[in-house]
Length: 468
Image (cartoon, rainbow, N blue to C red; front, side, top):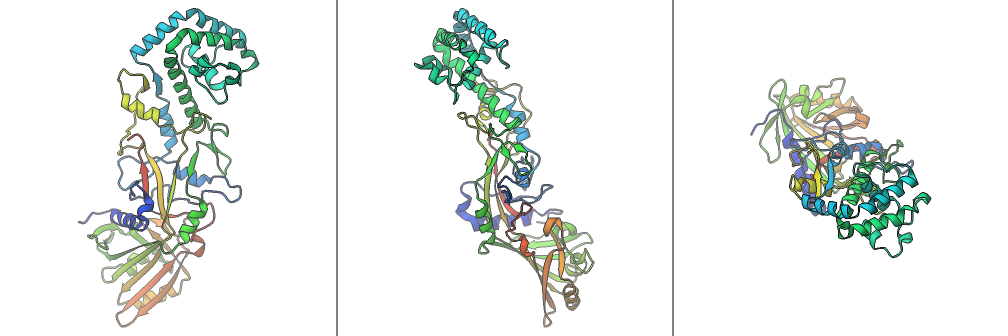
């Protein structure tokens, strides 16, 4: 196999090494290969040490949807935006038969319904906002806001101590309560249908509000830049992440031979794999002695034999995900049941969650309605390059004259703050076989770095397509 212009073989090899190291720690969630895009590698230092608030950089990285139709996995935009678009198109409605049953019960209770509307108008001047009929919006308001925690219409109907149940009634609403209870009694057994519509749509509104307008009261997460955002949680403690990155017994290693095949491409062979071609700038670059193209011009040439060994120490799994919506107390935003039910119900005449209108979203594992639930990271790699060359002594001299060099791998600078000029180097030679060995190490502050800018190299990811 020779697949031009791709680094998939390298990325898959790193994923396989990480999976082998972590084994059962990964659980049932498969590890997938990952292609770093514009969002870069993971900012793992997710808790700001200055105020213990969530790091904005970490949040923006984990709150990403997965790009559609890509292998290896790639990040795209903002998952909460896609989720909001989908959830806003869900509502709870009754089948034709159930709606007819409820309508008949309401017709029998016309006098009581009118009394509720009159009492509410007298007390508050106008009906509560909402998409349903005024009586539906009143029912939602009373069940959701006049009880702490919120209650159900059935509980109100059956309560033997209505004042204890409705413990958050505004003063002007006291006259509404007995009239409202009379209406609930009048619609009788159909109360369960009314309750399902009223409460499920109220919960939908709350989950949507927590995603659209997060606040401290609805579960919003405060970032270290003072923004309040839909909540995500990282279940791996920062201490566990740092300890994992310091554990050099968990090191992924990879060896590859590299040879210049054309002016613009290398031929690369990774251990155990067939050779493939890759653009010279997409694989590996070294900036030393003022020559930014030193790897291709002097090391991996057509005349030299070049082996690159890379070590990724501190292989560590980090798990995270959106914060699940809870009904009582009403908190957070991520509520998938309405969406999966709406997908299942489609246009069937059933009582339940349905789309109206249908969202233009591909929910399959080829679409973009997905996100990461875990990443395997390591420290940035150390590199050992062995070159057999007639010019081995000149290569030695070049590196010995530079205290540090610039390095990039797969187009990503291996340094501090995106800089390439921070790797230290050590050079040894063997004149008997004309070889020179260059060992490149990241600066110490990059190893389990303790700042909100610290970034870990991603070896693999765990994905979730929650509508599947």
